[in-house]
Length: 150
Image 1: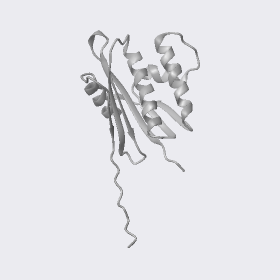
Image 2: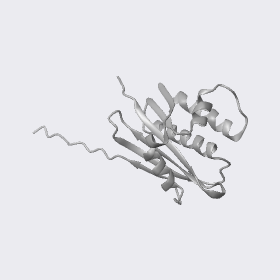
Image 3: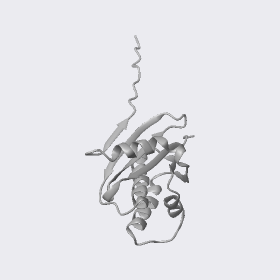
Image 4: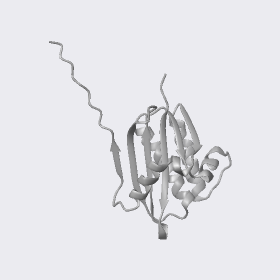
């Protein structure tokens, strides 16, 4: 049985449509497997930036070949939109539609809201991302011992 991976996402909107998004992927033991930070520009609203964070979180989990994930964020409105079934032709609605499509890449995805204090790592990464010149991804380095058969 494959255990769930937890993907936390958040966004930080600064003045004039600039901000950052942050994602962190942890295994079932809470160990960080990867993190992602990206600066965003020309963003119309905090909800749109939060939706982009959910989309990037899915992409990071897909790149890590996760199959069973819990996707968490502190943007209640975005979580509610993802759970909804209505079509929305706004920019935000199109990103939510992309999130729903991206969820089909996994055997199981549970999207849930968490309070801001439970999303502190993703929040810190999003704040850090606001000042980046380019996206950054950090992967946990896994080393294995080579066994000698002598």
